[in-house]
Amino acid sequence: MNTSEILATLRQQSVQIWVENDKLKIRSPKGILTPDLQAEIAAHKPEIMAFLRQGNVAISSHPISRDNDLSLQTIGRLIGEIGDKLNLECKQPIIDPRLMAQSLTVTFRPVPNRYKNEEILRFREELELKLHSYGVKVLPWEKAITEFHYKINIPFLNWKKTIKNRVVKSGVNAVIDVDRPPSLISRFKKNLAEKLYQIYSRFIVKEQKISVTRIAQLIGWAEDCAAKYIEDPTNTQVIVLTELDKEFVNSETPYQQKIKIGLNTLIRTFSEIVIGVSHSHFSILNMNLSDSVFSIDEIDSFVLNSLIPKVYVPILPLPLSKFQIEQFDSQQSSYAQKLVSLGNKLAETNLFPSGSKLSEVIKRKSYRDIVNVIVNGRTGVSYGFVAYAEPPHYVGEIEITEREWKNLYPVEGFSIDEVRKNSIGRRYLKTKIGTEYKFKQIPDIWILSARSGSNKTNLSLESDIVRIGLTDRLLLQLPQGVDSQVVDIKPSYDVYVMLGIAMSAALYAPNLMRNGLPMIHFHGYPTAEWFQVNEHYAGVNNPSVPCGTYESGVFNFLSIYNLVQQGGNITLASLIEPDHGTNIIAYDLEYLVERVKTGCEKGEIELGGKHFASLKA
Image (cartoon, rainbow, N blue to C red; front, side, top):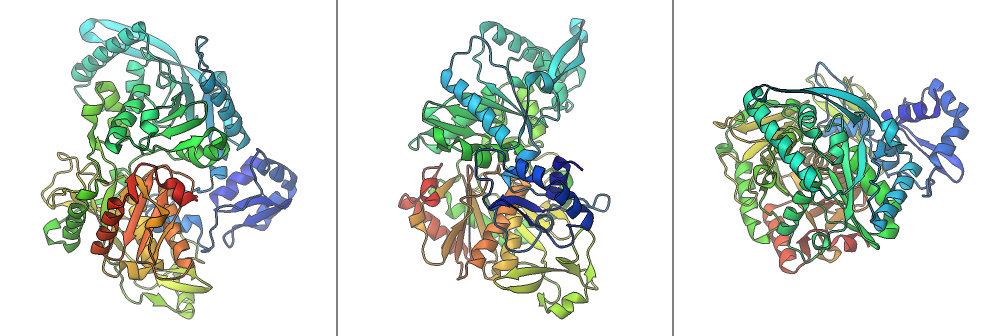
């Protein structure tokens, strides 16, 4: 194996490797470092150390702390990334941005000759250097693209044409471009392409679902944006550099106005990420609608902890194919009723702005159809969630002795050193709490959640609540009488986050879950001064992975574990997601509502990134 192959193998096995004081350090789950693998590492040690030292940052710094002795593979399976009978493999969570960077490939689209924005050009040059220094593969444009031919056939117009285009290969993770104001000719071509697409959609395929790639082929010839040059838009993100929007990043701009500005900017540039640049500051925008602003001298930290994670894990909802679909009677669920009450009581905080219908924001049908595929059929977007976890469900002993643990059986897909099962199939986890090892039953987790796109502060008990289960697989229970083929009733983007919080609380902070666990998420932050005795926060220094990703669930799981390890009682916890917002959980609904209302009244909790700096300090 060469150096890259060795590091890739270690990454896939949850092994952390870094350089500290000119020594190669390794942290590995038990049994992973076989004699053969150790020999490969020893044989390539100088090359591995040289690779890890690349860049202008302190590569010798310790990797993200994980002292709970659970492998990332096990944590991932615990929060729902589990295989089925046909596929026992689950996606390996990567939470170290340096490891993320090593698997990424990006390219920069050439800047037009007439482009004169010197600030953006300087930033673009610096960005390319920083990405390369962290191990991201930066392909020259000519090596990133390939020739592609496709046919367009419009029978009613008797128009047939074979179009040749040069497109970015699907293996490239991101294309970085500059904002290019449309000319009169390009506007005409786009309007013509849109009319032809509408005809094709209505009369040729008769409104059937069209793939993203096919839509891009049909309209791409008229586009001047980077999306025109992408072979597969589901695999390659577009990042656009543009002038900093001062209104958007202004802390005094109402967040509802920021939603409109942000969505229109993303749609206008037809991109997943927009970086606004000025001579002194820059910002980053994606569908999380973060208004994070950075000083121009913070580009090192920005590239590693903000940009690389967003390229590595794009925002995508959990597809319904992940779940076993069932139904439940929401009228008979006391926790569904508590969830409705939770939303109602938080209405006056204004932390949950109304969502936006995609049909109202995206005027072009072709763009709307592309977004429809990407967001898994959702008709709208909303910002924040409310959820209520039921007390964990156990069968038999909640905790067993080490002797009893040793007599249990292996569980397919898990390390026998971490998870085992008893004769009736209940699984037990070996985990470290403080200085002791505990052997705890892995409970069944059930969460009542508002459906994606709903009005979180005015939920309908009959049609807005879904019940999400995590046993040995993921389950989704829809309200009785609601046809998911007719009504847009899909789970929140943040399913992994909800499950990560609930599972970690059940294992490490059971007092929080004893009577159920209210959970809220909003796109803002509290100040550090808001917290009282036994109220804590964590996650401020985590890489800013987008909402709803598998990795964000892992980070929230670890945040609760780390808070518990610090000792003391927890009545409320704020789990921070940089460039995104805050998850707040508490032992009691009324307590959570009262504390959040008080914070809003005093200006200690607000939407947007205004208070993030106080938490960072």
